[in-house]
Length: 476
Image (tube, rainbow, N blue to C red; front, top):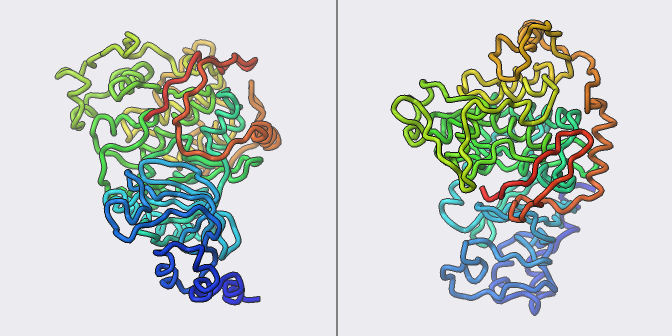
């Protein structure tokens, strides 16, 4: 049976649908339905919005005060998609789980708010998604796949493949206890494949965070990156206020020029949070974010401050930081913390990888391509250090125990060696899969929100890295 014949059998003409269900349709639907070539689903029996003839600011009654579409379970979108429930809600609008009666598959439909500025940004997202879909036709780069888009009742709607839970909710289901380094590395490898591809296409994600990394399936460790709603091409940057605060790169806060390197900063923040269950830089505001950065990295180089529009907000004329206490009276001191000690992690490879992502100067920050060759990513042990070598994770690239190995791998073309086991990590695929399955048994519906209040305390695991006394509020 051909695709066209299948479509016809799954649908009826609008005149036939109107004849059968006139009484169940609203007055506006009786006229609206005739604009569609085929009707697959009409939400018969759903509690429909009683639309008004006059359009007004509420779009015939279909929109709420924010301009969001008023969702009714069991009703239709475009006489084809059956609304099942809401997957998430954000500043852009809503994401709904829907059953596509044409393809007979469950999908995610992003319904953009009926406001001009959100519609304009969604058009940029569409441009990026179309470009990436064309360049990744074999679906090899772990990016969510856009299927199609359409307009319905003045709302731009974009359909995507339906994925599983996001990594924030994955952590939440694990009571915010961190994950094993083996599973974190598996996630990191896949995210880097996405970031390498985006960099090649000169696309900046601009909002990389745990909520925007989703498992493909609840019982598998394969993931995909979602939500390119804030993304842009490097040569078409529009916004200066981007990225969620806990994952925001310093050049964004300081008002310097940014590029794909901001996504590598976000990646390090995500991986550290997956390890501890707690944000690496939990600043109450941007001033404290900068203070958090300085605790580990020291004061930023003067060259960065000189080319930053907002540098004077956080630093005086001599480049010294304006240290301000937070709401709890805590004042953070530059160079007062070691990254490994902060994470309570003894894996030098992991710490070295993170530190290379967390450089002040984006020119010194590791790129996705180089990161995929990093010994920790490929499972290679660090070079053995001499007894006289200082044991510190804050070191220059040239003094890192991995530096020579990274150089050799870059020159040799980076053939991945066999992975070896290390403390608190089993790098076998089976272990990572079992960890996902174990946490997946407590799986909750996917959400893109952080409105719930996190738990106030955490158990200390036998592994020793789940040490956080409380989590900060997630209103970013």
